[in-house]
Image (cartoon, one colour):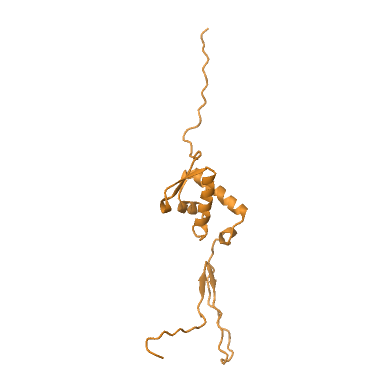
Length: 154
């Protein structure tokens, strides 16, 4: 073998792999020539309580009802806040850990813009989507009803 040459060595992985919140434990195979021994105790892996994400967050594709529900949540968030960026929408809809969220939200924002419900301001990272309708703000004072007083001359 010449000095400076590259050598690639392929071996089976012997460690555990962590994938998207799941721990995949490597299966250790005993050498063929070794005599059978008592099974080694498995290391205690503490159970980590993790919130179960809704099924649509982990699926490759979302169904029409799921997308319509997400669109309704987006509209309510826009009505409450007045305007949102894509990142703020991901946080408001609890989609910040989903890889597919930015593209899906862009499509939903485009649908709302085509329906003339929102206005798009800015470009790229500075894009804000502004709700064109009435913004839901808490009212400080109750509504006042005006009543005409009757004239008591007579």
